[in-house]
Image (tube, rainbow, N blue to C red; front, side):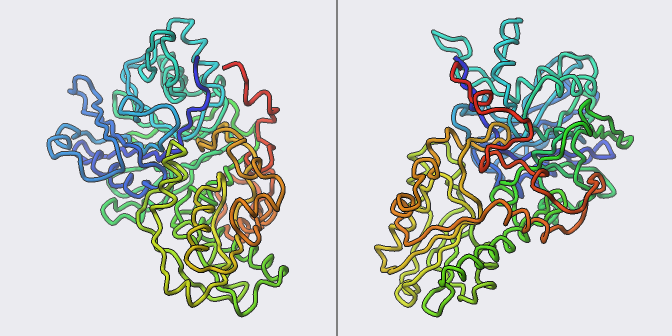
Length: 506
C-alpha cells in the first residue's frame, strides 16, 4: 500500500557560476540559511564536479536545520561551479537521510539531480504504474508485505519521469503533461546546467537573482538579504516556463500548458510559509499581513472591543505583523505576553504529540505584563489544528488573563492541501471541522470570542501589498480566481471534486 499523503513544503536553491572555480556549494548553503523557515527536518546539496568528475555530480545531506556542519573536506569535495540545494519540511511518512533532497540518480540524459517544492497530487497513481513497468525507487522502504510500502517520494516520481527522455527540456515538458499538482523545481544535469521551472499555475514560488559572477534560483527573495551571497533580486520566474541556465547564459522553453491554465498562487504562502522579508510574485508578505491585521482590527471595532481596557497581544513570531496592523486600526497598544523560546515551527512537525509538546515549550510567559493588562486581544496568523492556540490560551488563563479574544488572519481551514506541499493531513484534524459550531470552537480554544478574516479580506490585503507587477501578469489587480484557496473553500485550480482528490482505495 502506498500512502498518498507525502507532502514536501520546502526551500529550493540553485546556483550556476560563470567561472569554473565559483564556490557554488557554499553559496547555495548560504541561500538555504535564509530558507530555514520552509523546513528544518534536513537539508542537502548536490554539486557539479566538472567535466573530469567521476561521477560528475556529488551529493551531501544532513538531518536537522541548515547549519555549519558540512566539514571543510566536504566543501573541498563539492568544488564545482554549479550546485542545487534543498531544505526539507518534516513530512508525515518519509523520514531519515534516504528521503532528503536533492535527489540524484543516473537516468536517460545521464546523471540528474532534482530539488522540488510542492506535491504531485497524482504521484501515487503514477508510482504504481511505474512499478508495474519495472521502475524501482530509492526512496521506497521495503517490507515483508509490500516492496515499497509507504515512503515513495512524489519528487522521485517526478525525477524519474523527467529521466525517461534523453533531453532534459523534453523530459520536463513530457513529465509536466503527466503529473498533476504544484511544483517549483530545479534540475541539474551532468554538465552542470540548471533547469528551473514552476508549474503552469504558479502554485509555489520561485525567483531568480544575479551578480557579476553567478545566477541563482531560490524559493524566496529574502535570500538576497545575505551579505555573503551578494546577489540582487532579478525576477519571479514565470509559471510554465523552463529557464535553462549555464555559463553561456539563459535560454527559456515553454511547458505545453503555459498560458492554457490560470495563475493560482498559494494563498497560504503569504499568510504563513513566506518569510516576512520576501515578496512573492510581486506581493509583499509583510504588507499582506499588516493589511490583514487592519481587517481584523475593523472587526474588533464592530464588536466594541477597541476600548481602553484591552491590549493587542501578538503570538510571536507568527502574529507580529498581523498585530501591527491590528493595533494601528484599533488604537489598542501592542503588548507582549509571550517570549518565543526557540525558532522551531510546531505546525511543520510531523507528529501530533510533537506539535502539542512544542506548543507548550516554545513560549515563556511575561507574567508582569499579564498582571498589568489582563484583557487581551490575541492576534495570530492562523489556527489550523488549534494545538498552539489552545495551549497558549490555557497558559494565559492560568497566568491571570481575565478576557481573551482570538483574532486569526487566515480564514478557517476546512480541507487538506493536495498539491501545495502543506501537511494538513486529513480534514478531521482541522479545528473548523472538529468544532463546526462557533460556541464549541470558542470553548475548545478557551477564548471569549474567536474571529477570522474572510478570503475577500485577504484578497484586498494582497492588492494593498502589491509592490510590483510581474511582467508575465496581464492584470495588475489580484482577483480571487488568481489564487488557490482550496484549503479554505474547497475550490481548486484543477476543478477536481473531493472524491477525486482523496481516494479511499490507497
